[in-house]
Image (cartoon, rainbow, N blue to C red; front, side):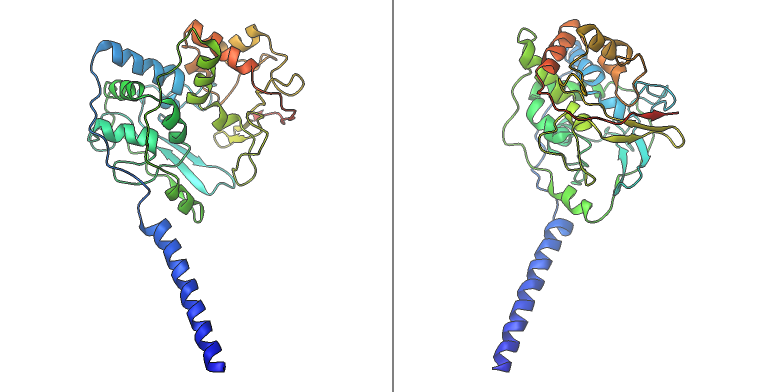
Length: 325
């Protein structure tokens, strides 16, 4: 009997070892789920480049994350001469990672000059780099997988190809275990191209699209200490963004329609001032929020955005004030 129990124990131990090994292989040896980059070609027409510039500069705000910014000024203003050069976000207290965004200029050594158009689109919408690495989801590829049509994605590529090449290496994002294994497992191949953006004539649908493709939820959703989104608290604020050392921090505000703790008491003009001047209802400047990009939205898109914000369900959530020095 003892021998039988011993054999059973050994068998169970072997099964457990195999299970652990399979997990290790899945998360640390195998590449993220991915497919070969599509054979795509970005258009070169002035109209397509202008469309891409509008999306990058005013809708998605790509270069606000992918460029070093002037920390002493609100609005994520890019350091002159560094547009698209990538950015080191530094160390966030308690965060299991150090974020560094990629160089998006056409530089062939440090940028995307040697990437195919299909590889750039795959990175944007499927979260996989040219070399097969999984991108950190601060790059909102899961959102773009649902919101950026083929035409819009290629228009963005067309515009990025026009940037001045900059030989700047921001380095790679560093992710600690066990977060790293979940990041590796996050990408998934796109199975269906997203539909075109809603027309400006459909204000509510257009506004909701702008909120999604502009990644409002990524900054304004309430999260716990593990960075997991809290159920029922979409856009209710509370995320803490550290500024440069010694400059304090910003707490993302509640932008639901709650009148006491959100923006329900804001007038349309108050919201327009947020987009155009980067000032809240009390008149203070807003840091971290890339309002300098949204200021360039067309009048129709700003009105669509306001329409969509009015439809966000109210969530009562008191957010502590930011501390900016």
